Image 1 (tube, protein in one colour):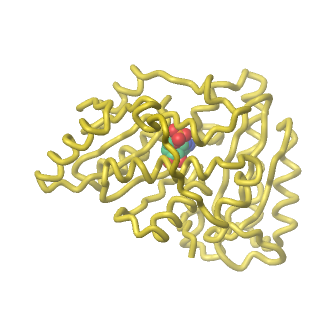
Image 2 (tube, rainbow, N blue to C red; image 1 turned 30 degrees about the vertical axis):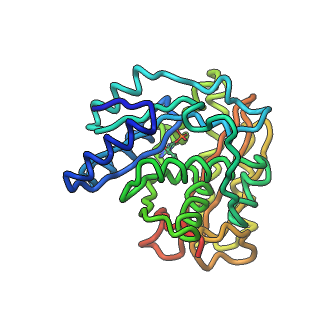
Amino acid sequence: MRLVRSVAELRIAVKALREQGLRIGFVPTMGFLHEGHASLIRQCASRCDATVVSIFVNPTQFSPNEDLAKYPQDLEADQSLCLKLGVSLLFLPEAQEMYPSNFQTFIEPGRVAEPLCGKYRPGHFRGVATVVAKLFNMVQPDLAFFGQKDLQQTAVIKRMVRDLNLPVDIAVVPTMREPDGLAMSSRNVYLGPEERKRALSISLALFSAESAFKSGERGAARLLSLALECLWGVDELQYCELVDASSLEPVVGLVDRTVAICVAAFVGSTRLIDNLILSPNPEAQGILSVGPD
Ligand code: AMP
């Protein structure tokens, strides 16, 4: 595994891979890697000839009151996991490398970035889209991998790729969970033992709606109220919504297409998100095909 820190080195290393005719897969991350990231990297390694992973805590997707300064890091553990998983190239840029002084060009996502997290994290998806577009231009992957855990992020990236004709395919990987159901997240490390127990109510709320859905419940309001009943453990609920899995627009009345039930909530001072896909077509149940169209 090769470690590179500058864009110039990265370009040379990627060029060498491409000259060997290899299909290049890319997994962008912010580090403090867990089994969710590992699942993306494994998928990438199984579908591509060379896997490029980036670790960069992107300042432009954090607002001033968020956790940029204390975002968890363990570069040594991240490196050994990447090595174990067969990563070819690990890109570890500094902020100055990604955003040199006088940086001033951003990608502005459209409607897909407005609901859900977009309401509570103004500018977040602008930062995400910008850094991902930059990383795509640097790595020029054939295929890039994103987690369903960040459902709206996948929708924003897919929309950007289509709208800007970026020459990359996007693969979405299912959410990895702890044995009790909590969605894995680098931020789970912030949770104290008592908060960790209460955080479980988020996935339980989603599973409760899913189980009613599987038993035939199709009323959007009923599904949401079942989820809300379980959300006793959170300190501040930002949203619990049923949205069209493609457009992310709210679904009211009867659920007659593939939807996502999405939650964002604070437990203590930790903001957690999670979602599940509900599809009236049993074969598509739980399978995500998020896309803007
Ligand atoms: P992050 O390091 O949090 O920016 O995440 C990097 C990538 O890993 C994103 O595409 C996330 O959606 C994905 N990811 C994070 N947590 C999980 C999880 N529990 N299961 C699957 N993918 C995940």
